Image 1 (spheres, one colour):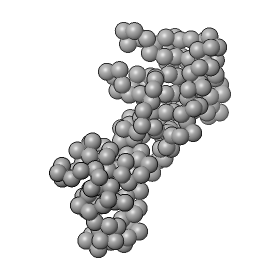
Image 2: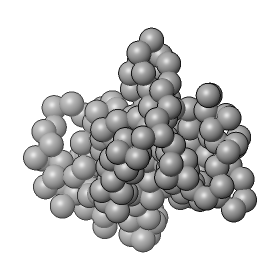
Image 3: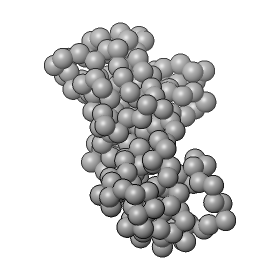
Length: 206
């Protein structure tokens, strides 16, 4: 049974965990899931925070699916109607399980993670994986040690605009704090100031 056939048989709920790992961009194919979203079926999807800037999530998030992200997704799995589970197997194949113990364990893992995950809204979706010019300007000024107020003065915008821009950056990165946003941005090479330490950035963005 392939993913398409399994998804076509769904009548109540589909839950997905995708780690975007194992040498492939999407082991359980969230992109394919977007083509099988149907009215009357609930879809919940967990992906890593790093996937928030992945264009492939666009179609999925814009469909009826609810997408959330966490720092780390421990495994890849797809469960349909609480009765059938599909997980990656050897040689890039997928294995289907209907054993209650396997399905229940997979769902329990999903439900443990889901409440802590950060929702991905349509407004969070980037047109590309790059920051906008304004987002880069704000991030650079905060990295230099500017407060929201001084950054606003430098850019000749309101403090509210700066704070909204910071919130946009945090949403795109799936960050739960400004410090975490700085760490994630640094990991992606979005800063031109490598001599700064994360402790200095933490003091700057407070």
